[in-house]
Length: 265
Image (cartoon, rainbow, N blue to C red; front, side, top):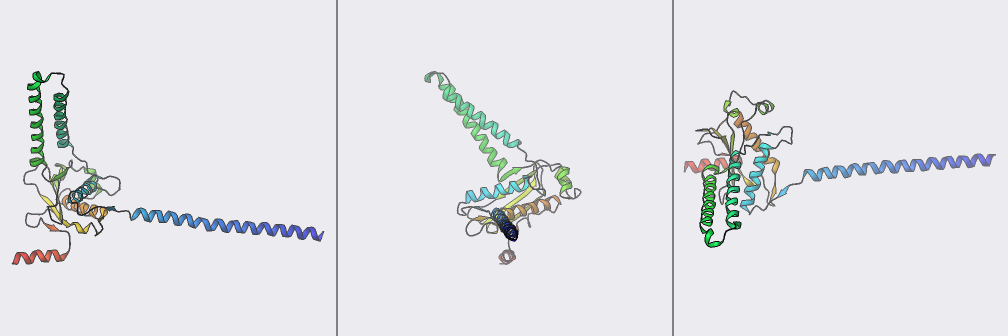
């Protein structure tokens, strides 16, 4: 009887040991999964877009796309979420389509060549006329404009706690967003003004591209988005610039001091 009791006791102790070992294994594996998830989150947070800073065209494109996204993006709760006005773009698309129709008709018209020379001439003349109109629109209407928005809605004004009494026109006129990056210059400028308004007030901010790109070309997208949102809020509050102070430098105090010294000399 004593032998049977000892045997059962040893079996029970063995089961307890196995249970404790398996519990320890489970407890040790759970933190490993948590660590992997934290590592993945950290990797997502530090993911930046790398751009060849020597390619000025690509650099300007990335900056323009970020400015537009900062104004119209609606994914974040505190985003501006403005509505873009595609009226002028639709007109240009219609003219492009019309030009393509004339070009295709000239190419595939079921007419023999000697008899179709007048049709070909008319189609070619119309095509080049439409191309000229598009070029004039780009030169004199678009200029340095990258986007036109619709008037700011009352919901957006309330959401961002803007004082409508200081800028009553913001709910009447759309916004015209302009950007400038002169050739061989490091300074990027964003201008916000009203569309279709004579002598429109504006806000203007200039930054060095080095504020948003490091030496390896890594782009600080969130930094530029934050600056553009601050510029829009200043426009919404009616804190407009003038021609004299419209070249605000969003860089460092050293650059401001340098500008003053040049003016004195």
